[in-house]
Structures are given as structure tokens and as C-alpha cells.
Image 1: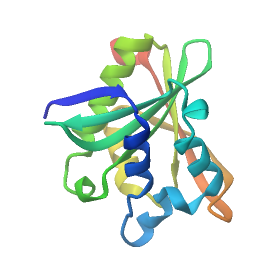
Image 2: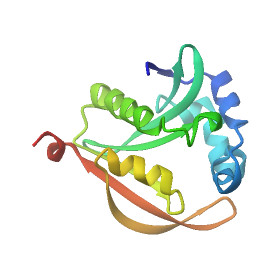
Image 3: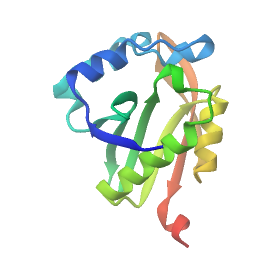
Length: 158
């Protein structure tokens, strides 16, 4: 799989904002949280944190990379609904990590995932991430359990 990363355009952000996931994964629909949606659609708030991911010119996902402390990059991501649950998650996630390593040279990655999302958690664990803490986050009109995961790159290279 050959993924291309590029700064997200307004057109791409609007297309992604319309994605609708099935079943429990509708939790990840952008329209489910008005604050997240506004940040995602506003280029001044998206800044240079957001990247569209294409494969053969087709938009298949996105990443958000934010430095939260020196050498620590927090990752947010999403894959187009039609591509989820089909065994492509690890390649997509590995490509995102490789892109971020080349661009930011981080010492550590962090991410947060909804606790019910066992598919994503399995992908992150396969890539070497470990659960760090469980917390409640206010989003989508309620409070939901999330798992903070981390990957220290020095451990990966040893």
C-alpha cells in the first residue's frame, strides 16, 4: 500500500466531516461533537497539524500530529469508513508513524482511543503502543472512557 501524506485542504476537511461510520463507530462521526467539528473545519484552528492521506489519489484517511511537550507527539487519526474493519489498519497506522518520525523526530508518541474500540487498540498494540492510563473525556454530549496509550521510540530501537 502506497500512502501519500499532504497538508489537509479545506475541501478534504469538508469531505471527511461528512463521513459516517456504522454501529458503535458512529461515535467517531465528526458531527457527533460540535467543538471537534468546528476545529476540524476551521483552517486557522487546523493549522499545520492535519494531514490528508491518499492512496492512488483517493482520500482514505487523515492524521493530526500535535507536539504536547518537547519530543512528544500526540496522534489523532481517522480512516474512511469504507476502509475500516478490512485488515488495512496496521499498514495505515504504520505509514502514519513513519511519516511522523521522518517529519518530527519524536522521542515518544501518545494517543487516546475510546475504550470500546477494540479494533483500534489491537492495531496500536501491534505497533508497540502500551496502555498508560484510563480517563473519562467529555465529548459527543456525554462522558466516555478513553485509554491513553504511549510508545517510547528509544524502546523500539533497542
